[in-house]
Each structure stands twice: as C-alpha cells, then as structure tokens.
Length: 403
Image (cartoon, rainbow, N blue to C red; front, side, top):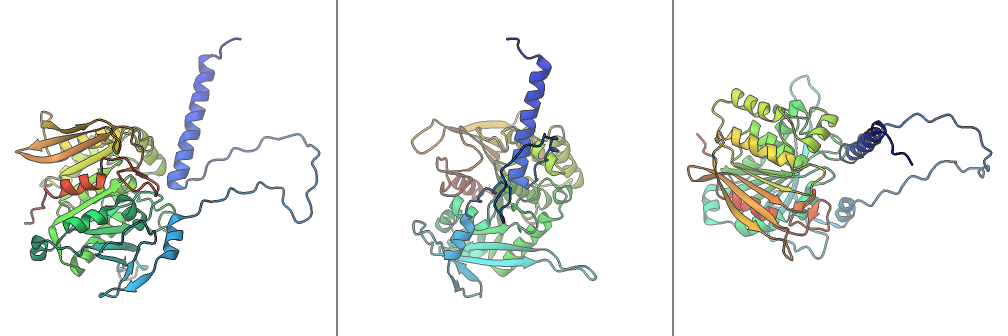
C-alpha cells in the first residue's frame, strides 16, 4: 500500500485542528459551527413517516442546570438591610455563620440615553470581624467567575467564603448577565473592555457601591478569577490600580490580545504573541506613575483550554508592569511531589527590595479547573494545592497605598 503524500496528510491535520477549534469556540462563546452546504444526493426510496411525525433528528437532551436545580430549593429570609440571604441547598455544604447577601447594580443612564446595564452580585460578610477590621473596615476579595458559571456556583466551588469567615474578609461575586453574554463569559477579549469600558466600568461601579454601603478597608481590595474571570480581573487591576491592592489569576489568558471571539481563541491556545509586551508598554505610557501590582498566577500544566503559554506570558507582563529587571531575584518557595490529596506543583516568588511582587504556581496534571475546589461542580478539581488559600495568603501581605 502506498503512503499518502505529505500534502494530503497536512490537509487532514489542518481539517482536524479546525474542527477542534470550532468545537472549543462553540463551548466557550456560543459561536455556532459553520455548516457545509449539503452535497446533491441521488433520490432514494424512503419509508413514509406516519402522519404528524417529522423526518428530523431528535435534538440531544440538554443536561439539567445545577444552578436552577439548586436555586429552586434555596429559601430566602430577610436580612437587616432588606436584602435576601441565600442559603445553601445541599445538606453536605455547611451553612456559614456570616451573611450571604444578593443584590444588583444598575448604571445611571446619561441624559437622553437608554437605561444603563445592570449587574447582579452576591456578597459574603463574615460573622468573625478581627480587631483591625473593626477599626479600619473589612478587607474585600472580588471573585470573578468563568464561562458557564454563575456567581453562586463559583462561591461554592472555590469555598472562598469558608476561608473568608475564618480570616475576617468580605467576598464580592459580580455576575455576568446571560443577556450580555449567553454563557456568562466576561468579554476580556473586547478592546473597549480592555481600555476600561463595558464590563470593566460596571464591575468597578459595583465595588464602589459595596464600599459605600459597608465598612470596607479601601487599602485592602483584592480581585481574582478563573479563565475569563481571570482575564477580567487583570483588566480591572490594570485600569484601576488605585483601587486594587493585588490580583490573582487562575488559568487566565495573557492581556492585550483577542479583540474578537476568534482572536480570543488564538490567545487561549497560543498566547498574545508580540502583543503581550506591547500591551503592557501601552499601559505604562498612559499611566507613567503606575504603582506596583502584586500578582499571583496559578495554572495547570494539563490545561488545554487556556494553555500554559499564557501563564508564561503573564509572568513577563507582570515583570514589565512592575519594572522588575531580567535578573530579578527568584526563589522556589515550595516544590511538592504528587500526594494522596494534591498534584505535584512548584511555587516561585519574584521579589524586589525584600517584597514579593509576583508568585507563580505551576501545577502538574491540573486541567482547566480551580485547584482544590469542590469537584461536585464543573471547573473544580478536588486535588490540591488549595488555590483559594494560596490567593488569600498572598493577598494578606499586600496593601494599596492611598495618597
């Protein structure tokens, strides 16, 4: 048997790659696959259907939504401020002693303009308030979910509220509206969003609302997220450095690329390329006095959705943003082999003048999921290390100096 010529093998390889990318775009962004025009076929005799029946394939049944199932079983009781407290429906999830509040923010329309966009959000306020928080206000962690997630699913999957209760942090969960993006993806790839408009402005307004309604320490506001939420967290920090004391990016894309759903897929699979450095230099040109932005990056080496090349580029972007030279001191603070409850991983710190400005965690075997999360929910991996604890421990070391 003769082997196929190289050109034929290359064509088949390109075709398979195209189908794989189309499938990924459909899953993440809701982009319908492009259907080829049907070829003309010879007419064959077919058995006639019974009256009232259609000769069409039965659509695949959609899996039941966990969010709807859980939401139907939740009950609400009135809170002192008139906002409902949403209680966990699953009996195996302990109800925390703090307040779990739900509300929404609607942007005020400008004169002559249509009503502004609205954003739902959830807020956890701990029962335990440390002495420092009683004097200066609670530190706030802003958590941004990924595609195909809701704010409440992200809260449950990461178990961040449990840690926040132990340490005395408030936790804010803004939620992308399905009317804005069908799969609740933050539009991190949109150029206007990267420049501070769209979702960026709306999330910043939600944070401002929470800070005005509750006793929040404005020197200790941190933002983190996974996947599209990580991309959005990075954009928020770059556009509002005076607001954010530190940022945490789990499985996130490099900043500055995309600008379309096709472009977003390219970044997720191959990084932002030359645009990665150019985008940060543009930020520094626009803000010559940009303050340092402490950053923790967590990524799985088995991630095929947002590939690890993105973490490598985010490292370079953070070094450039924080004006750290190529010879910056790097310390391996943890190197662990695979255990019964954790994946093998390595954590490196990049420091300047004795202060850690960048922490990078690479986790072997971890796919596109929150490390150490609740595996009952999608995009969460049971095996550690615990990403939520890593984030909170890093945040605790940083404050934003307010002039």
